[in-house]
Amino acid sequence: MTNKIRNFCIIAHIDHGKSTLADRLIEQTGTLEKRQMQEQMLDGMDLERERGITIKLTPVRMEYKSKSLNEKFILNLIDTPGHVDFAYEVSRSLAAVEGAVLLVDATQGIQAQTMANLTFALEAGLTIVAVVNKIDLPAADVAGTRRDIAKLTGIPEEEVLLVSAKTGAGVPELLESIVKRVPPPSGSEEKPLRSLVFDSFFDAYKGVVTYIRVVDGRIKKNQEILFAGENVRGESLELGILNPKESSRDELCAGEIGYVATGLRDVAQARVGDTIIHFKDRDEKGNLVLPGYTVPQPKVFAGIYPHSGEDFRFLRDALAKYRLNDASLQYEQETSTALGQGFRCGFLGLLHLSIVQERLKREYNIEVTITVPSVAYRVKLRNGETQVIRTPTEFPDPSALESTEEQWVLVEIISRALDIGGILPLISAHAGVHRNTEYLSAERVLITAEMPLREVVIDLHDALKSASAGYASLSYDMLNWRPTDLIKLSILVAEETVEPLSMIVPREQAQREGRRIVAKLKEAIPRHLFAVAIQAAIGGKVIARETIPAMRKDVTGYLYGGDVTRKKKLLEKQKKGKKKMAKVGSVDIPPEAYLAALGKSE
Ligand code: GTP
Image (spheres, rainbow, N blue to C red):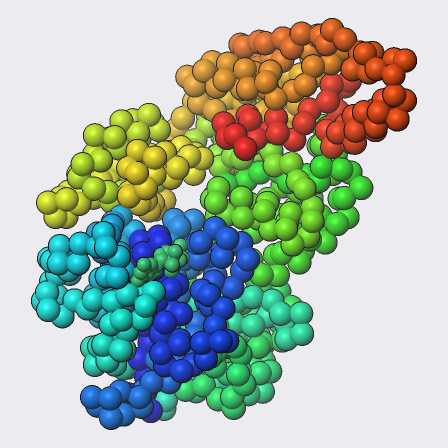
């Protein structure tokens, strides 16, 4: 049975046509009729479709009859996300397949993500099927792109396929290549069950559903199972394949990809990367567990507060529901004098943070204020204690502080050689140390550098994209903790400290950051009837200051004697606006101010 299965994914730079090609494969194998196709079938979430990015992996099983071999095959396609925040998901999905279709847009040529994903795929030992896409476009450089791909992958030029994912041209040849070149899965049905979890989510009716690749053995309905890494017991209440909707079966065997409904209530128990084994084999757990299981750690921390205090309950419920489908979000309740009740959350990166924020707004209709994001720091106290702190509020009093440390990471940037000039200054501007530049080909380079995590998560990704016209891609690994002289920069509005605006920064940057923030806040906070001082301070010492002058006129003054309803409306509007703002003493701080402090404008 396994020799008739082909498991593969499509790897490509953003917008090179991955989802469109997946649609054509689903269509040409007759998995779905044309009229059933919703464009970009695999990008299930609205947010993904709108932003054109893939966040979640949705596998699809297709049946395909090869004309040249005159045999039927089962093709399992897994989609992969592209952004660095989700690198862990990419590596898990690559571990679930044997082949990768490397897709390159003929109008763009090989780009950063192509290289980064190809490297991942080769490291995972996958067979590469190389494809030039968008050959229908007049601007396509088909021959040049084909030559470059051949050079990069070592695949003979004539074996690099030419496809239009839009018109479907070349897709039949691609399907033939997949069954001929991608090796069948190598597992054995006779061995004890072990299967890799490459995605999990919560379903209101079925509980936690996992997407799995069965590596060895078989799993049947209603069996007791164990998540070997988390050591959590569950039951295979329902299982089946995805074509692309869930379609129930009695069993899944070695080599197959499908879903299992586990009866669990919390996705955190069914982590991506874990191994499902039979509960009866629990004593053999150590031998059965698949390699590479780690829990992705949140790297960025920030507070989430509802705009209006009454929404706190809704926010609490929304976060609980949201987390059912995204175990990488961590949160705990906290209270701030300025913002009221809210939550301190941990995210994988800033994109993850903005996705959470946007989904809360769209799916739960809750507007939130996000405090200045921070990474974790380690502080040593005079009394010998060591603490890891995740928020400026936890920063100890300077008198108790012995020393401070932050995490450093090894950063790998793949870019066009012509962008080196723009990228190297970014490394030093982000407090990094350049280690090496290696030419991967005449046009591509791999730049390695050591940098503080703080600098990487906040804006390195965006800065790289703008320095390289979107071509450079980034990945990083933790190195170690290193001493840095860190201080807590407090922000005072009208002489009162606004805790959610404070941040932890290296001492030598404090002055510059302080000046930047107070200037931004001056623009973001509206005028009041009195002058408002905005100050940045270390300990009690003010290092930067701006003043918002008092408002000169009563807003409704010029309406006296005029239309009363208009005046009422205006006051009403003002009242509404006020409700949204957090009050510090007698000063209203709008939610945008928190974003301004981050250095982002929206
Ligand atoms: P991400 O999910 O963000 O990585 O993007 P993607 O690689 O899935 O790209 P997608 O399939 O969304 O395609 C990007 C754009 O290219 C869309 O507007 C497609 O319609 C278009 N496109 C994809 N393939 C072809 C093709 O062969 N020819 C033409 N003309 N357009 C194509």
